[in-house]
Image (cartoon, rainbow, N blue to C red):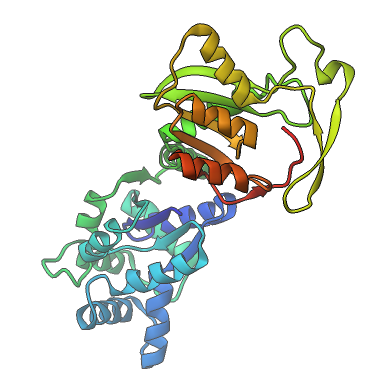
Length: 342
């Protein structure tokens, strides 16, 4: 889950960025302004810029400098969605959000005259002011030594990304998309990297009943690969069809297995044997829990760790064999694949 905080000068376009992220990227919007407005109504005060500042500062002084954004963050966490918190105005709020995972602070600015024209057009309850009052309001919120009070200058300085909204919406949109590409990109872990290689190997499989692949790795170095296919020189299922054999497991589950093929794990171990590659202490990556035969070969060749994308519905016996032999087996998720043959 990504949490974005928005700060910036008055009328700079914080709401425009929020609307774009909500409409085009599915972010859920949480507003400091709306939170304070509800408190203003509860206290029976007029809804204007003075009340916004007074009540916001009072809530922060009474509870903590980060009280409002903390309340909004809890709501965002409950949603489980990417969220955006508008608008962050104090260093205390920034500091609190910095402690949250995957948090980024955006700041937006534009020429004061452009911004004033925008607030006149939007015409909210707090925007019916003269240009001089607009500038005075902003200056009042621009800096403060009190951590409970607005300090837009400091918040903008601490932003991870800054946006110039002095041009067209298309120009702002391009800036937003450029930043999103940076923060949504995540370098894969080693396990994810090698699992992707195993999935790539599976594309070479020649039996459509189970296009699985595997790779064997040691010290982050690829040793061998394998995929499902018939023994060397023999016809493949994709060419002549499957050769089925019915079996019944310990739980009475009846399945039809294609016995024409050699499993991906078996092929990888055979490749290692032919090339004289020792697999002691290696890790094997595959799509799902290896079958009993593959599990025994994995144990005997010295592989010490098996990583699977998901569980095989009839894989309990293999898991028990690994446990007894001291081979670690891990799963990317606990999803069970109900699949009758590899």
